Image 1 (tube, rainbow, N blue to C red):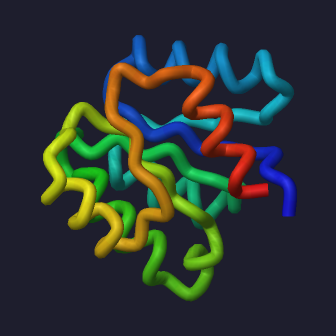
Image 2 (cartoon, one colour; image 1 turned 120 degrees about the vertical axis):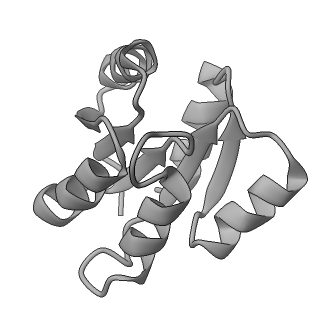
Amino acid sequence: MAVKKILVVDDSPTERFFLQELLTGKGYSVITAENGEEAVTRANRDMPDLILMDIVMPGLNGFQATRQITRAVETAHIPVLICTTKDQETDKIWGVRQGAKGYLTKPIDAEALLKKIAEFG
């Protein structure tokens, strides 16, 4: 299944804007969420083809939101790609254990991100 609709989850307006501009410029439909709670709601309502998930956010963090999304029957099929400043190996391992299908560290390299998205379809 080709990736067409991407949910960008980040509490930073600058980061959301950067990713939205990059992805819409490449022909993707982009929806956004500012935190983990909103991400879970939008994933259920909008059924994106891929989710780009920040980790460090107020309230429900990205690890918790990823776990909820990847373990819920309705949204388990949606791949989650973590995009965060947390670059420790333990963070990467934990992200995968929560159900993430990939992990990129910020600042996000546009080419690396687009290549990773292409791997999902």
